Image 1: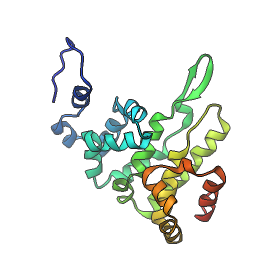
Image 2: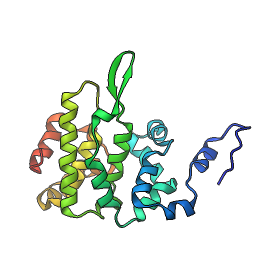
Image 3: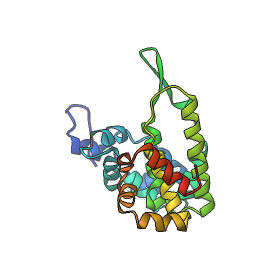
Image 4: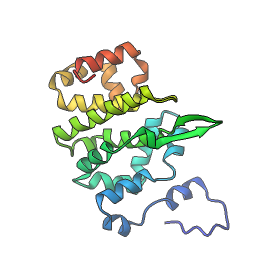
Length: 208
């Protein structure tokens, strides 16, 4: 790990190393502590935003080289702990003000939903826990309709549809026979579909 004294500028590769968590500290943390550590990762917003492909591609890069996320993926109770954490999320706690106007900083929510939507997490959840995540996501979508601000909700839809792919065998078959949709779910490319098509997918799974 890089030891930074503050006397010289950090190169990008040094920044990545500098923000790693000491392995001994990670191993001693509770799973709740690892979750909090991952959600506090200072480079998450930057790395998702500067990816030359997509926010999701930036997230996958974090999964590969941030040891906090790698440790979370190893925890057998990560799915249940994230499901419980997600239940407590409220958009009201994300309200900020810019130029006198309210808006909502959803970069943290995006990172959290990408984490939950990852196969390493969903595979560690029970069907009931995944159902609870869907209910929470739909609750948050309803909050978005009632609050001012602009939202990018593809990551929420991605989460819901990935769970539906696991929980609903009819939807699994539908996706497996729909190459474009399968690719979109694998790579967060739902933006290629119209709002009407997205609603059709949600209707098909009976979760809208």
